[in-house]
Length: 210
Ligand code: ADP
Ligand code: NI
Image 1: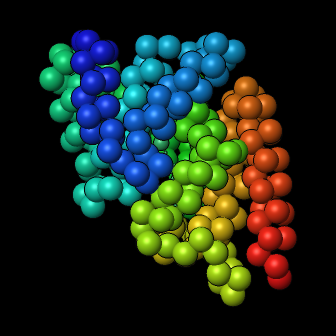
Image 2 (image 1 turned 180 degrees about the vertical axis):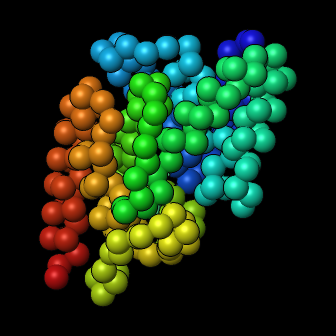
Image 3 (image 1 turned 90 degrees about the vertical axis):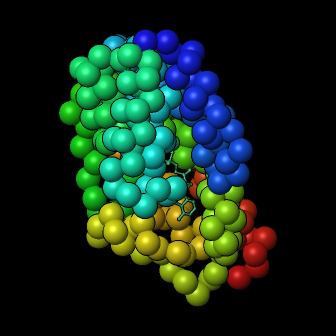
């Protein structure tokens, strides 16, 4: 199995994305995951591989529910990964994604916890704010509408199909993440980024002018 070949394939898939899911998101998630692993332990090679592949086939870009399994298996099989490695990566990737305020995303391995924290750290803070508006713009969503309050999504379908404005996304996901971090190191890293989002929202409402 050649990590560099897999990296090149993923780069090609995500290079031109303008919705906040470009290659640099993936590079940051790998970096975050390495920082968390240095404190928490876990299988570094598996963590890197799962972080690299975590957005391949994502529901935001693919209609078929089994797109991640299909595409990730294909990429790894082309590089002669063992079936044990493929199933470990698939398990981690299936546990990473946020599915709505009231849907619990359980991780049954340290590696899954680390990749989930690494991905969520990139959804908050300054980069997270930039990504949220990039994603909203890519879906023709309003930045904000003062008369449309946030929703508490009860299931993944409701969360996935919501077309609300981007400020709502802060209350429906981004501000909830710091209390849902899976590792102590991830939780520590989330504090500063969370505080920055709160400050951003304060300024935003002040400038919006009531
Ligand atoms: P996840 O798998 O948890 O959804 P991703 O790595 O795919 O994580 O990234 C999700 C990114 O997409 C976040 O940064 C988030 O801001 C953005 N995003 C998703 N849904 C919305 C939305 N409804 N409005 C604005 N941004 C969104
Ligand atoms: Ni991601």
